[in-house]
Image (tube, rainbow, N blue to C red; front, side):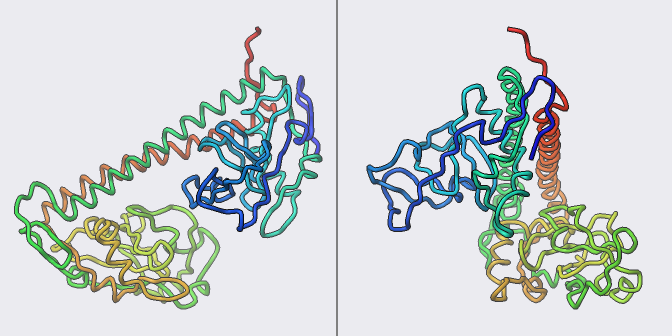
Length: 407
């Protein structure tokens, strides 16, 4: 691939920007429990994944990695990063990239990341992509003068820092919410007297009831050949699937649509605002409430429950299903072998601690505050990620130029 050259830039093969040193080809017999960690693709994807170690003394310098080294995973998982998890030994299928003179390391990182899709389209393999050095020799990128490289990298790094900070806030708010779920749905608000039940200790004034007793109906969406009712996007009635059910909210994406005839034929699975949805398989037990804007939609292969609102509010029931205690009951009752399922019968048998209505409302209010904070930060994260994508496309092609102060 050739690259249209921006004024003042050079077009160079990606291989000319650095030295690409492949990791060591370890054998399973080399793995141990002592020595330096072996950094494989698993550690690139998750630094906290299970790690093997090597204690031999024959490790070459080119295979050693330290914090700040630029790594490029070129097989299966295609990505690049600056390593920051301590000394290790690089496994095969990952390049350690040492930038050449006149090349800024951070600029090279972003250039590789921006080139991944293009490299993949020229790579070997169909289901598992491999980017060999020969592809790097043919793939040209735009290279500005070093000061401009540094400025571009500085701009993109600042966005990355904002992304990392936002992710940290999201993780923290999710932990806070998890703690709130555990505390509020088992201890309640302001209670001093408790009693022992099948689920453990709950406030003395609460009752333990089966979900079946709390709902007018608990049923499942269309399970038999739902695709026979599908029509083009936007031309029928929306049908919710597992992909649309998230913890506490509807994911407004990846919709399927049913014909009006199919919708009418499946009246039993037509939804009402306030229905509680529960995922049967995959992210089993994930629950949310149908908001007013989805009243009258249909559903496919998910459980829906219609609460008796004189006994339990929808948001409280859904929150309990999502809670650690609710999850325990879901996991205990999963059936199926190849793929685990949570079935209508099991939801009907689920035990739910029920506070007085006023306390349910107060508990839900606290949980919704935490959920709102998470959603706001997730929206901010999406905006930052979109900003980064746009900036990489503009700055790394020279479509937009950065101002470099005269030295």
